[in-house]
Image 1 (cartoon, rainbow, N blue to C red):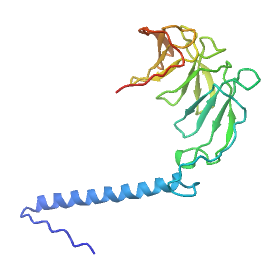
Image 2 (cartoon, rainbow, N blue to C red):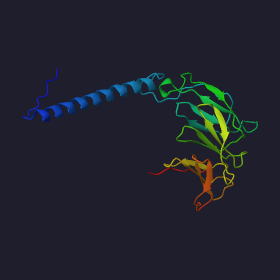
Image 3 (cartoon, one colour):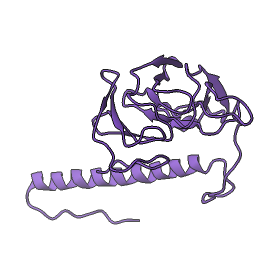
Image 4 (cartoon, rainbow, N blue to C red):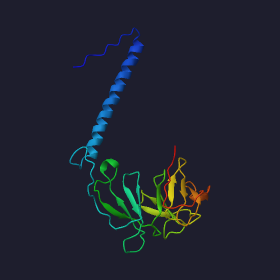
Length: 220
């Protein structure tokens, strides 16, 4: 059994302050330990061992597709949109994947259709905005069009069009809440910024070198 901690100080106020600090520290440590155990149990729930890092099958997509996008929504579900269908036409369809219950979504691990994009597209970008909506922009077959997906209603709505048609570009959410779209096939060195507050695009500085199928990383 642990021995009680002796606080040797003549000042009751200092002694009480130290006691409160120790109690707070112990409480935080216990909470952290309990939280870590809870997370490990949840994440390893379907695994044979707690440290199992293998892959396991889950539900199949309703529609086979590639060159699509997959976006984690704030409710824990995953939105998959557009893409090319093997041996078939470009897709306007979209689906939702139900994540585990602790992420806020259904625990089915299955896919369900949601409303379709207005424009079939592939090699586009999809960006989760601070308001929880998803901005889908450009892509093969979509020209300069852009659309917004609202998880609350499952519906798509048009928004401002890009100034330049592009595919295989990048889209980066900036700290301001705006979205930077850069380069891409057909866009040369062009770059644009989307403002969710107005729904409009504006041109910004040009890339020094034209590129597509590249990467974009937000720096601190």
